[in-house]
Image (cartoon, rainbow, N blue to C red; front, top):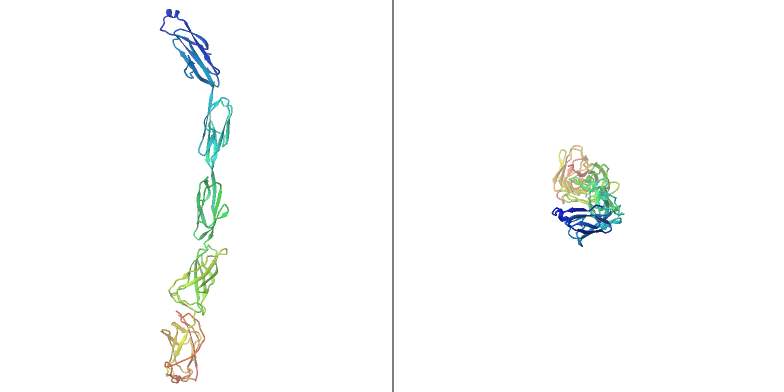
Length: 480
């Protein structure tokens, strides 16, 4: 304990202090501390004295009362120029410790705020994360104690702090794409809880989206997919197939006839080096045959024009039907567009020779025999095997001239040794006519020749030579 300090005022003389009387100050302290000096303390009148108040360990001054009046929890008090008796009383209370508890965004700590504890008390704190959050860490007095959900202070003897932090829960969406396209974003994508994220699926040139799997379940050949309100990990994967498609079909922009083998050019999507095969298809009603790879994007097929098949005028569009190709695993969609060209007539009908006429005159050696042939079309020529009065087609003596409007003039010069034909007996046997512009092939038929005057007898016509020879002739397609 400390001794009382007696202060003597300098304003009194020594003789005056001889007559001063002692005054009494009663000093007391409650439990938990001391006051010094303590008890009934005698003080010379007009002197001063200081009292010191000291709390015990784990206590603190609660109040100091002087002459019944509080002067607050002061640690010392001085009486100056004491002229009367006084009292001073100190009271104490157990020291209170403070635990400051706080929580960041995403959760809470209970209790929170300023928590007051007496010395030696225990206190527990519960840490709870909000939905979609996780406890990230708990700091006690600035030191991490980990992502604990509860913490207990025991035998508290000092102030403390406890702070909880939280992190928004995240999930992983694993996105990948197979050969032939891409998905964006791709790889392992981190997504916050409750958020949404869209993925775009794009096929490369020459490919199509085959399927999109979300968590191993098919969503179809979609181009975008959105995860909403994410609360777990997910997977998304896209697969692609080569774009198998017929892009265009064309034939020569030229006249075609019976017996012609027509080349068909088929343009396709890039086969990537693996040739396609023809599954089916017709052009103008004619089945396609053959399928030859010219390049990764071009193939050739063909068809033959047959008698009685479909015919098309030059300005008519030619239909393509049921054209399908395959890569061995899948087939293209059916191609059925029209071939639009303006100079590609197809004639599958046999030619018609309407009439063959010979002038009513006698012709001798060195004279010309002229046959006028009326047909149903132009651009005819004599077919292989045609003979006129024993003269073969390949003879330079036979000359066929087109006159237009289906008329032709077939002529030859009579030479010595040619067969004689009596008047009225000249006959042309058309074993088969072949037409160019009408796109046809030979059709057997024969007819008698008639004069320009149908009522006229043929006895005026005569070719010198043996009697009753026959003229064998055919018409065929003229070479362009």
